[in-house]
Image (tube, rainbow, N blue to C red; front, side, top):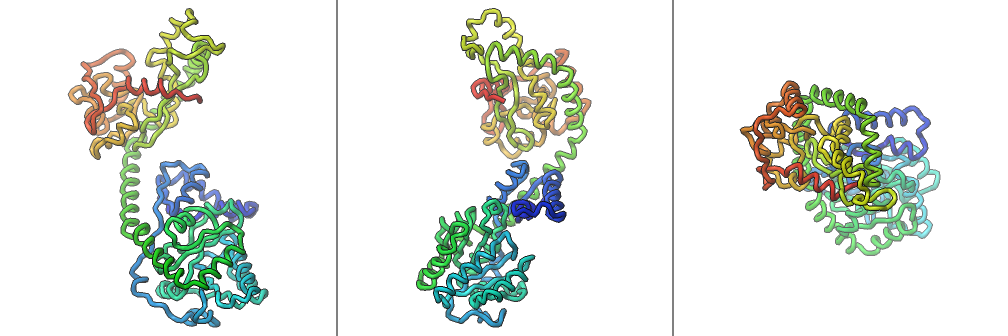
Length: 492
């Protein structure tokens, strides 16, 4: 399991640092994390979308927003800023604080431009405090001195216990990003929830999830990247209207309580961890089965490839495009995938536009293609990919999955199968879903071989009647899924 709070490797690449060895190694580490980890916890919706764009599997990434322990803030009191820095802002000034990583990606240069703009307008009642560490800390300090910015103060390294008091001694929290929009989604919103816990209104200068929260909850201002004038005027407006600052501070406190509960965060993380452990244990118990499936599927795809090509050509001639159809169904742990099959629509059209019914010589051939094993042969690709197993629980629909009970969901701890035990009468004393649960608990390679043999050679015990899905006690028969596939044919 990996906890993702920012994607520094991607930020480095977006900022043109890929030629250096360290960013390159970081980028490789991010890719390794995608391969090695079973679950990734993302700190924001923006990071989740960025990870998915990087190629991370959607089902791996769980979004759990950061939350801050409230207790230190409940007992902290505002103190003179001289406790942390000397010189310090004047006591009556509006103080905006940036607390976070000091680097190019967070655009501290833009903050200095805003400070200079305000100084030129003689707004000496507005000050900035910068707290944090990073590769640009020294450069920012030198820039402050070189530009003669008397309204910007760099705090020394802050003891963690005094951080809540420092925030409470300020008036505005700043969430900053570089003007390069390519890096915004990869940034961690530094100390956003800490600002809220300290009852600080927040100003963000880049779009994303934080900006959305600010606007929806009326806790500050969300500005366009690089709009220094709007940034400065927003601070001027707040400095001139302290009642508005108090109103926004009250909204910030309400937003923190309702949307960033530390106990809810702990509960969500515990749930993700328990699920990840359960899935990991289930996967370890199926390693041999997975290798067995992949080897057999690869062999069959190679051997049957000429036949599959011929069938695809016939389908194209008889029914036109698309050649393949499918339906999105739940797989391992309920994660959806599209199960492939050849089209079987009888009301399609020839490539020339004539109805199929007008092509009389194709009727007999079409009947062969409609046979179950031929129609579903493209599903061998799903087996090779790991979406399906050769033998496993029956395939169900997404609608079935949503109405399953906790016990019934255990059937999803195994990949659904091309062949189900119930279809050949294995576990005949169990009907429908119960037969799938029985197989999940008793599966073995020998049992799979027996089921495959019965399916190939027609050996079968008396088959139980499959139940219609109703709540958590049955499943939708394959024929119904096939009908859905016919209706929802999709080109590939």
